[in-house]
Image 1 (tube, rainbow, N blue to C red):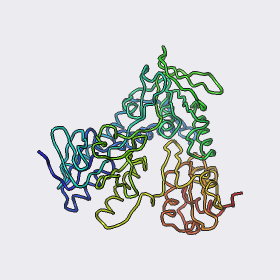
Image 2: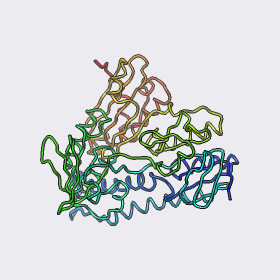
Image 3: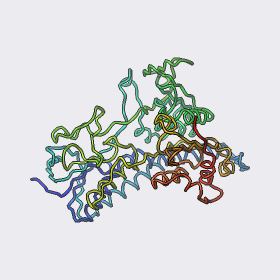
Image 4: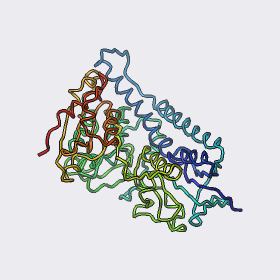
Length: 459
């Protein structure tokens, strides 16, 4: 028997439930299909559990520095990883339950658990059920990439998902991948007490960032005792009596690193391989991401792809914005586009990196006349008061239009302070408007107008 709906949503990640809410309020009959865990990556294996673990790691780090603040502790700082892991699991479970309860109580929404596959452009099969709708929204997210490197099938390894189940402190964690996910876990487990080595194939960490940002982050991690092995041009894995041997073949140092555990943090892949997209004629790129236009519609009329699976953003906030774009266009008569979105994100090491717009490297390559302003966090009162002075602020603007092109804030509160710049960029006003603001003292954000007042031409 075939069940007809006005819309079918595949996946209960960040975009799916909110879209179901808007569509049902508009009077539509909606089916939402989830094959495993409600809430998607953010709730289950991403933001919520990892930031909960980061908070525990930060507490341990500050406790060890207690004497710097005049606080005396009477015993060594210990880590109860079972409690740390259980706390993160509880945060995830509560959020997941909340999402599922919301959907099941939503009038007009039918929740179906199972694996969805396309039968045609407007027909979905879930087990023995067949569903049809004129509009189908794919919101299936992504998962950790397991690279086809030599020896990967011969050793036990962790991913960003399985490491969340670890309720002990690894003796020596080797992190393969020196980018956003890898560095977050590297610092986290170092603060829990593990010896940590980061192995990165490129010449430096987080290669998409400016070199000064990359070098500053490397210094922050090394100051906490994390070993960095860059230029690892020939990575391979092998069993070892002490755990796992990672062959790195770096230009300096030992050609191998032996660790008790290995975390593979080398990117993500979309969950699109088993949806039967070919039966619907839906096009994907070489990496499996669903191709979409500026309105997030696929090459098949009536079929949309939202969130990580479309390759147009890999964050919770971009997934939610995908929902906003689709809902505004379908229900509110607007013409919102993905190309209007200003890219912004954060790296959640401590201190965090807040980023928006172009890097300095990208801005220079654009050929524009530029202005740049910088300030070390060691000259930010709030950072000095907190005893957390690592990092710097950097803002780049177009010299003619006075529009901000991009910014990096690496330092305490950087993930929050960046939002003032994000807002000005979205408002499309000259940076002089922000320069004239009267911010609250003492904050990190209060120094942004000062940075803007010190903008200098780029040679």
